[in-house]
Length: 227
Length: 95
Image 1 (cartoon, helix red, strand yellow):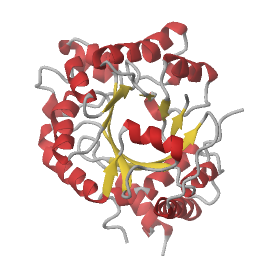
Image 2: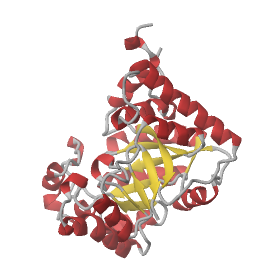
Image 3: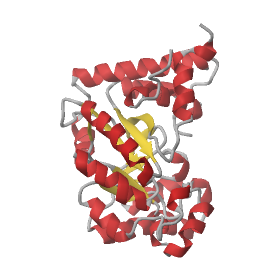
Image 4: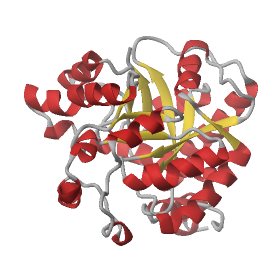
């Protein structure tokens, strides 16, 4: 039976207090740093951000560790500018960012990253094209993991319809976690497919995400606790 | 007021035309436990906030897509995006 991804399931959950606000970012080039800082500063005046521990506690107790409302700033793909622009702004403001990273983008040779990005729906902005790298490095990932949440967003920015074989699942689901855990010394907790596919759409894909060792799946409209 | 000038539709239009090289896209997502049931949330401010957000989702659906089937996840995405508009400047200038 397909999962219930409808209006009523969502409004019932949200009305019961089971929700979190997100602000989803992609490229954060240097020229937009001041605007990003202003937006995050305004948000942090009204909301607290969420650590992985906070989320674990909420799923265990139904209680946030703050009396203020909460939100999660999410910086997708693994851009160099996420590490060099967005993360320092988060650090300055004392807020926690979540960074879903396409691990194949990070692994890709710098000279091939533009081609990789254009082959895998990773959007680029003109001012970035003159940089040596478009993706962050594994050293960046490790440094981010000390203050923020880093987690795989597949290897090559693919969705469940792009991963049909065991080798596909190994490359896009299992290997990214091992690679990231090796870089951070932690256990990456969450996973997100391209297009934000939800839990329950494919048993094979759910099993791979679960068996790889993730405990959350981030989808378009839900954050699923899966183990 | 025509639907085309309603606040939910104005918010949706603003949110979906935000520049992804600059602006954050506001969203609210449900927290669900696929292992079993979620713990009861006892904090009144959180439940009150959730009630406001849920009402916005229902309002968006009733105003903009009353004939849409309940299980249309694309429609859910739009309604959640509208509900989260208070996160950012999206909707500030909506009538």
